[in-house]
Structures are given as structure tokens and as C-alpha cells.
Image (cartoon, rainbow, N blue to C red; front, side, top):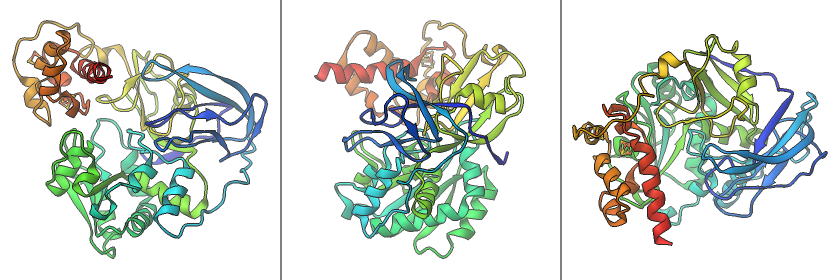
Length: 416
Ligand code: SF4
Ligand code: SF4
């Protein structure tokens, strides 16, 4: 499905936290007039990124909304004037070295567009820069239904190549590996041809299986290196960037326009006309779904992200975020199997066999229920990347991913 640009909606709601790290503080007030690309929220925290207006118009509300994690976040509502006037701050950045490159990327508001939302400028400045040699470009879009990154590889190939050259140059890297699943032969062929003249760059075709795009899984499959518990990709000499993120780097360096739109897949059996769409950040799910022909059947579940790692949203008025790569809507018939009630664990070990890190989810659940933090640490729950494979295969429908999330939180809280 080729990407279609959605017209600017009547209103956007832009949350002040769309990344890992500190929430931004609004830099605009009620009734302010704003333009496209203007900063409307920022933080002085290193792990954080500014937030820009995706439209021109008037600030009509600054209020709290409930985030996907259930916590309240501030959000700025802008009623659009449809003129899409560009703010005077939008300028091609001046970049001469890694320091100014990372500063420009921070100013662009770029965070990991594959879903994680980690601020990109932080990845560009690892403490052990001299030991980092390899850029891994993540084109392993492994969650079912989502094809937005595949479209990026086919439609934004030149930007991906330019982005690779920039990151390679400023980080002084010798090797680039683009990992793509082997069910995307067109993307593999196109990128192989496109990077042929970049020294040290290659495309690695990966087996199409979930969760091939998980950061640690990708590093292992592309380099054979294992990221130890509590360590970062840079500790094994790698920096990992998603294909859409790397394409954005090139676009920003060419135009100076910060991150204000997002390409995402709209799909699921309840959607009338599934599409890949590029939308203004802050557009409501409801407007995006209307653009895709509305619902053809009553939706039972609406998910932001993929069916494995995404979050069910309580309302279709939820806004599109920077790291939102899909909106999926499923009917009751489609969700019936997943929504069966939990039954007791039958010790079949399917969850262990399904886990890419050979964790023991049933034992983790037992330790969590007993409040046994030492056992949780020994069971290495912190390695869990919340991929959902264990819960997917569990015949007893145990809610293993949620338990793992809570178990990790318990470790943090007890250590305070
Ligand atoms: S897959 Fe489910 S039933 Fe089987 S051991 Fe794991 S938690 Fe228990
Ligand atoms: S969600 Fe389950 S399968 Fe995935 S890493 Fe965590 S324990 Fe393993």
C-alpha cells in the first residue's frame, strides 16, 4: 500500500511526552498563534526532545490527557487555520562535526520512529564513541500488519542512503549493516543497489520471524554479538537506528523542517480501506480512521502500534504520536481468541520455548506474585523486551507480558 498524505485536520492535540525521558513543558500559552515547525514544548533534560507544532493555527486548550501507560500527560490543542504557514525558526541546520550534528538532531525533535521513542541525539553521543564502529539500520519490520517501514524503504530510499552517509561520517563508523526480513525482496534489492557505493555498507537479509526487529535480536542476527544484561548497543560497538529515523535525518538536514508528520499503517478487519498514511502529528485516530473510509464493522479493540507490542487505546480520540507506527482496529470476532479468560498454568513450557531470551515467564509470574525480588533478578526479568511471544503461545492465556512489566517496576521500586 503506497503512502497517501492525509490533509491537515481541523484540530490537533499534541502531547508533551512522545519519547523516553522527561516530559516537555509547554512553551506556548492559550490563544497563542503558532506556525508549522514552531517549538511548543521543550525540556532541559538530556534524555528528552522538543516538540513542534505540526500545523499553523491557534492554541485552544492546554490540558491533561491520559497516556498509553495510564498516566496523565499535558497536551496542547491547536485549532488549525489550514494555511500551514511555516515558522521562521525552520532553517537548514549548520553542521560541522558530531557535536553540532547531535545538537541539530536534538533540535529536530527526532526520537526512535520504530516505536521505542528513544531520543536519537543520545544514541549519537555514546560515552565510548571510539569503540563504536557499526551502524545497524533496522528494516526488520516484524510485527504483523505493519508495513510503514517497508514503504519508507521503497519510497524514501535516497533519504535512507543520505542519512546513513551522515551518521557514518559524523560518528566515524566503518561498517553499516541494513537488516531487512527476507519477506521484503523489493526493499532488499533496492537498498542493496543504493548502498553499493558506500564503503563498508551492506544489506543483510534476515529470516522473516517475530521479533526479528527487537534491538538486541537484530544486533545478534546482524553481528553475532550479545548485548549483556543492563548494557547498551554501544557496549558491543553498535548504534541502531530505524529506517524511517535515518531517512528523517537526511530530510531534516536538507530542509530544516522538524519532526511534524508520521507515516503509519492503518489496518485490521474493522477498517474499511486499510492504508499507509502520512499524517500531522497530533491528528486524532478518529480523523485518521475517517480518512481510511471509517469502520466497516464495529471495532472491539483499537491498538496503537502492532498487535504484539502495541497498546490498546481507550478512545479513538487519541492522537498520533511521533513513535506511532500503526493504528489497528479489530472486530469482536478477531479478538475473541485473545480475550478468552485466564486459566491456571499447565506447566507446558511453551512460553519458555517461545522466548527469544529463553526466559521463564511462568516462574517470573510466580516470583512476582510472591513479591520475591531476588528471584525476579535471578530469573533476569529485566532482559524481557515485552515482545509478547510468551503470552501469544500460552494455552492458559496468562497475561505474562503485563506481569513482566509489573515485575520490572517492582524491582525498581524496591531498590529505591
Ligand atoms: S505457556 Fe502458559 S501454561 Fe504453559 S508454562 Fe507458560 S504460563 Fe504456563
Ligand atoms: S515478553 Fe515474553 S517472550 Fe518476550 S522477551 Fe519477555 S518473557 Fe520473553
